[in-house]
Image 1 (cartoon, rainbow, N blue to C red):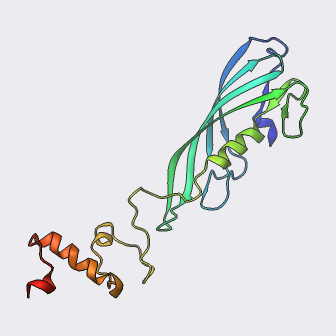
Image 2 (image 1 turned 180 degrees about the horizontal axis):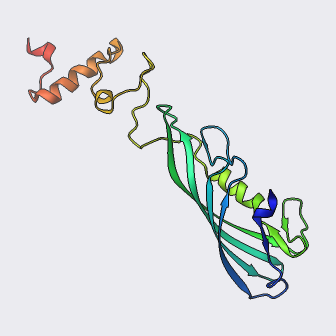
Image 3 (image 1 turned 135 degrees about the horizontal axis):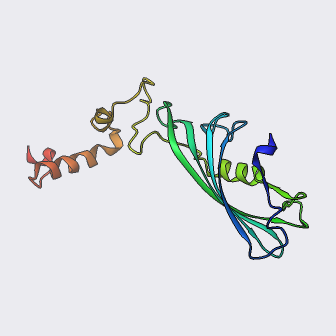
Length: 181
């Protein structure tokens, strides 16, 4: 599986200042992400990769483009949306920390930093559209966008006095209804 994410750096290793750019199209081998949003296995992932040789190792700058498959956090409908994430990582010739990535022989493995970037960039609570009204809390049915604005909700008696002031503003009389009678 990892071989598809390996990129040869033989031609630029130990040659600071050398650079190479590549475009890769990869079929995602396994699901990237959990919960409501993910890039499913088999989805096409386009990578624009720039490999730069520096004194410490190979510096990788990449942008990944794909399609996110998600379930709306408000209405629970499935939807897809374009997804893009950028990442930069140094692959050291001699990694000194456990969390550093290293150059392995004559290649770098882009899968770990790519997976980290994708999973961290996926939305935690995706929505199908910004104005999604979601589900009705009483019936559990999908709300209609127009009906969500005009629902008749019983007013809490503690807020009844404020409702009178709202009525005054909309009528334009300036006097609450209870005082005008």
